[in-house]
Amino acid sequence: MLDKESLKILTESLEKLGAGFVALPEFSAKVPRNQGVAEILAATAGRLQDNYPYFHPLYAGQMLKPPHPVARLAYALAQWINPNNHALDGGRATSAMEKEAVAGVAEMFGWRQHLGHLCGGGTMANLEALWVAGQLAPEKKIVASEQAHYTHGRISGVLQLPFAAVPCDARGRMDLGKLRELVAQGDVGAVVATMGTTATGSVDPLAEILELRQKYGFRVHADAAYGGYFGLAGNLGKDARRGFDLLHLVDSIVIDPHKHGLQPYGCGCVLFRDPGVGTLYKHDSPATYFSSREQHLGEISLECSRPGASAAALWATQKLLPLVKDGEFAHGLEDCRAAALDFHSRLDEDARFLTAFPPELDIVVFAPRAGSVSESSETSRKIFEAAAQRNLHLAVAELPVEFFAASLGEMKKDRPSLTCVRSVLMKPEHKEWLPRIWDILDEATEIVQKG
Image 1 (tube, rainbow, N blue to C red):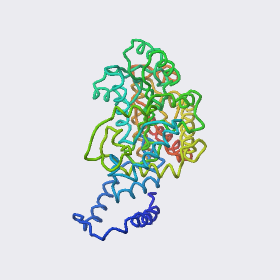
Image 2: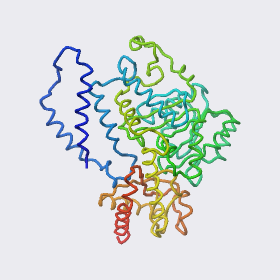
Image 3: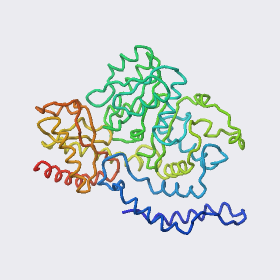
Image 4: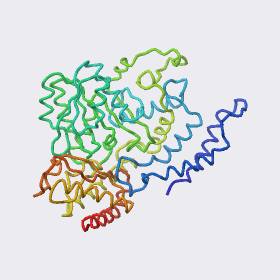
């Protein structure tokens, strides 16, 4: 199940890489304890077996899937040089590759002009976007929904900016009435629109948020860390489609190529519509910026050392799988959403389960029907465990009872939140594996309900 054929391609590519340095005199690298590598690597492989099978379609729990082989190989290939994309002196080729790859991501959102770069992940990318917001509107409030990623509140604390969480509607999206009340106070510097929450994949109502921006003048930051690539999918619902089509109007965007972008961890990306915000990063480092008058990526980044290997991997992946609608990459996203719609439909038609709203992207949440919310919550964990014993790996989540209001019926609401089962169907293979997933879930549920 683990790809080994691609190692031959890596060997051939290493030969080509090495050919670029044949003019150098021979030398022998001094590698400490080189003799024990095979033994230690075998031990490492043994330790790594203590993992869930993230690469397999029967893993449908958290936001984890393997990188594309071309990304894995390009990343490995770059490790023989280990470039650092902080300055051109440390990553000349990979800095150029990063600029090209980031431009490709920006163009996916309709931005020909932009400022952006790769970073360690969505948290760091969001930190940069909110740092810029704070520089442009000092001491003003950062606002995000209660279902936005928890790091927005934490980041605001790090930046010493006030933060407010906006309640959500019954579909896990930012409540526009509550948002309107907040921004009308005049002290909001930026509103975070989440384009695919990590719990349910809900997409905030971007069109209405942008209308409020026209009146109240705050920045709009789109946290599309998880959902950003879905703008390429041709099978989104009406509301989500409308939001993704308006992303070109926001002030900043964050996306994580290490999620749906088929990249190794960690690879995040932050983009700004106005290249002029680059002046906020201005600093002087004569020790690193000496070889070129061309802009160094470290001059527009809060991070210093950054792996050039990430840029090489993303560049190679986008060359193989262009970020275009109706392309092979886009079809993979459509398969993920189709799998989620199929799964939700099966659950919705089965009297044993409660479902929340239909998925906007590829995340499905559900719970077993029971006499009370507490009983349902306890049974959710049992089903999660029973499924795992049968090699189907899902996840659990704690969500507001209101998300399940349409299917609660006479269930006793003895607690405000429901522990439910959550499934992230982010592998294209999930579409064809859905019948198998359903059979295992059915068996696990039967076993739990029979006691």
